[in-house]
Amino acid sequence: MNDVSVNSASIKAQVESVHANLLEDLPDIGRVAVAVYDGRTDTLKTFVHSTRGATPFNHYEAKLAEVPSLAELAETRGERIIGDLHASGNALGRHDRQLLESGYSSSYTKPFFDRGELSGFMFFDSEKGNYFSEAVVRHLTIYSHLISLLIINALASANVLRSAVDVARAISHLRDEETGAHLDRMSRYARMITRTLADQEGLDDEFVEFVFLFAPLHDVGKIAIPDRILLKAGRLTPAEFEIMKTHVAKGVAIVDKMAKSFSIGDSAHIEVLHNIVRYHHESYDGSGYLTGRKGKDIPLEARIVSVADVFDALTTKRPYKEAWSNDDAFRFIDNLTGKKFDPDCVGALLSNRRQIEAIQRQFRYAKGQFEGFHEAYLDDL
Image (cartoon, rainbow, N blue to C red):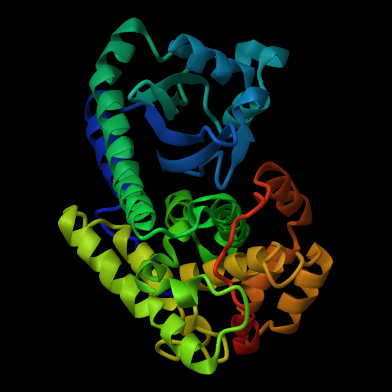
């Protein structure tokens, strides 16, 4: 796996450390897991876990509204104990049945919140039936609080960077699109591609989530591009395109400065952001910029974002063109497989048409938005 940031400072490693400490007092808790919540789409997504043995859930997501037991916990801010999964029989939901099939007999579930908003759920599971007594749950309180803080703080770092970029865009008078529907769509396309490749590439849900969080920052360097070029409603001249290309190096400098300013330069995830910004205009055949990297030497997260970004640009209306149909965009991108784009990333995009259409329905293009994607870029492809 190339340039993927997974080290001892990862959230997964921290949760595994908490689990190891927990096992000293409660040795029969075989699994600790966290799912995070995306309120924009009402979606729960597996994020990190520490499991002895095989995990029952990986790269999984579901609408919260489709999981009534968890939706009720979120509404009441309560907690749920299932003492004996075997005895519950037909009353078990699909997720609980998967736990049972994975060898677990009892579970404890608790939502966690950040500034009053639902952030996600924590799950503690045991192979022993009726394990989560009042004393055990009381003992878990400090651990569940610690885990929720780890998750909230880690996601806050990403959100701080995104918020800082939003402010910079506003000050620079960039068009609303850069914080609007385009970024909503392309970040979700990027997450979709990453999830599709996860098993093949050995990616965990933590990496998937941070590709989603950082994908919208890929073009942060455009803040420093003059409006006469960035907002030109038509084809750029070769000289103008050379100036446009400098947004990559400018973006890297901005990201590095922001990471230092917010003291998150040592985060396990900052390399994911750095790779997305620095390498998303590289080409699979080595003809891209700025470094001319090729093939698998281009970090995977950048290869993913490149496909997601171009696909959304093609299927969105511009001042100089109508939106392409999905079929036309699929053909265009497929024709550049192995040249501009990673074949695996293209395959992951093409295999998820229904999900693409669902994203497009939810995050529609707003009239009057301008996305800074020029015809000259098509020539460059």
